[in-house]
Length: 256
Image (tube, rainbow, N blue to C red):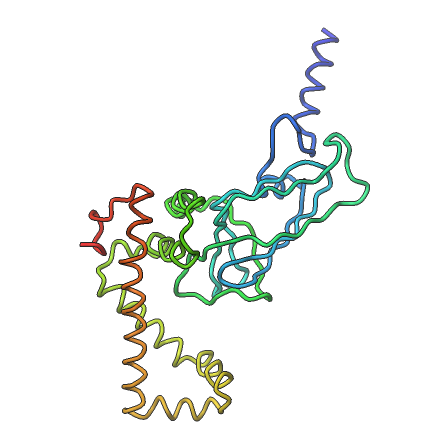
């Protein structure tokens, strides 16, 4: 009986231990963080990369799977999703904790899942999103494209086709959404300030320009041209990728 009790205690101790096991393989970054095995700090870089600082108290391997989702602390900033699986290895005996937590830094290739939100910057901060079943189809698409050699922008367009549900809209509906969004970005206070900064004139002068009917028409035409070019890219560039990932494009409005 004492031997049985001792065995049960050992089993419970192993289950409750906050360290990596070399026999069970790597844990995911979400598991490592939620269990307290590691702390993770995530910041933005641009629309293609984010930066992670991962600190671990034990040796072992932490996996960041393709399709891991990072939600921006600012609700107006895009949510990011990893494009590839990456492993971070902390060397040493898994049964011996570090005297001082060890930190490794890494830049990850990512996709953004929100076409209509602001792009991340180095000042953006993120947290790992748990659950989020509505993004499962997008995760599967990202996993399918993990070893695809298409350029990042083409793969990003395919992600937006799924995450923004452009597949379920007609080409004209997608064009209208892009057009309206771009015009809103230009005419908003933030947009006016950004344009003014780039061209070096006061925002008030930009506003006067927008109020001029002829200038407004030229701007509208340019915005519409850019929206149509983007829609064309969705049709031409994403169809082969989606088909390769077993998405029958003929079943969706966009490709009819």
